[in-house]
Image (cartoon, rainbow, N blue to C red; front, side, top):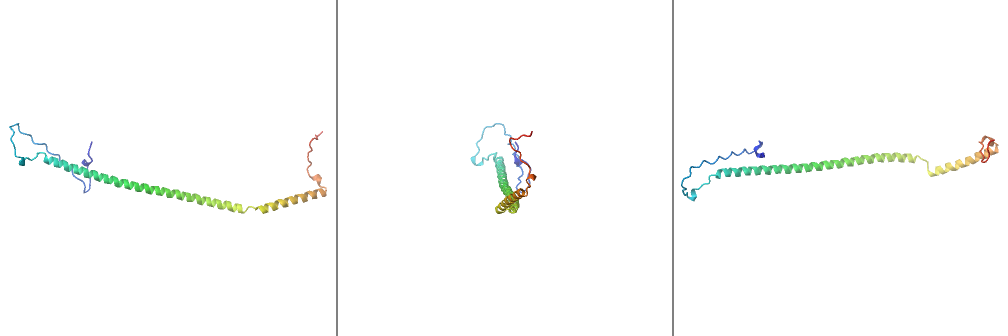
Length: 161
């Protein structure tokens, strides 16, 4: 597995990779051990351990920067998601307004056509005038002996022979 800190990066936060620690010097053949004073004992691995701790600190810094970038990206995506949702809501609302405007126009047209229709009084008056005229014309046809102009009704029970 490769480490992200080994790749190239740009910017002031870029940290050059730490040099590899030198291998420990070869030891001399076993000779009788001599006691060294405690104050002069310096661990031979102190320098590489410090470098490892420094490298670990750099890796932790880089990880924290990556986490910060991730958090900022997540916040940005959350804001974008909210904006897209608001825009979709506005589009739905404008579509509803457009549908309502079309419905209002259609209702106005229907109301105008209905207003032009005759009212109940005009329909009753027309029915009464039609009935009176029908009676007057039938009486005139009978008085003027114009019954023969009317079609003859077929009677039930009589057959043509």
